[in-house]
Structure formats: structure tokens, C-alpha cells
Length: 92
Image (cartoon, rainbow, N blue to C red; front, side, top):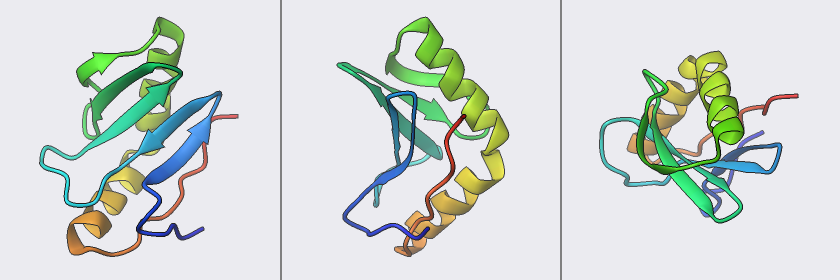
């Protein structure tokens, strides 16, 4: 699935929304939102860069990143080029 440039949500699972914003700054990262919580995660390492998520949501995001590191890196490259990003399947 190819996403609209207006829709930065690249995955959704267990109530966790994963977003990547156009014209964002390095290092390559994602934004994870769960209810009122939000955090930024490094794509290469899965480390939380800032913010806060409940422990279970944090573990799920890190697992998802580890399973999708290459797809995330590819989306970051697309984002930098101004191209449309692709949806990445969530955890099941």
C-alpha cells in the first residue's frame, strides 16, 4: 500500500500508531503514539530517543522496529526524496 504524503501514519497495531514525518531531521527515526503517550525511536537501533510509552507498548514498538528495520530505512529514504512512503504491516 502506498500512502498519501498527507498521511504520515506508516503502521498501526495494538492501538499504537507509527508515524514518519516528511522533512524530519536525522537521525532516521519514527514517532510512536499510544493513547496520550508518544515517543521517538531510532530506526537503526530501536532505542527510544525521547518521550515515553507504557512498558508493553515500548516492547511492542521495539519488536516491530527489529522486524522492519530495512523497510523503515527504505521509507526514510523515500521521505528524504519527497516520495510517497509505503505502509508497513503491524504486529499480529
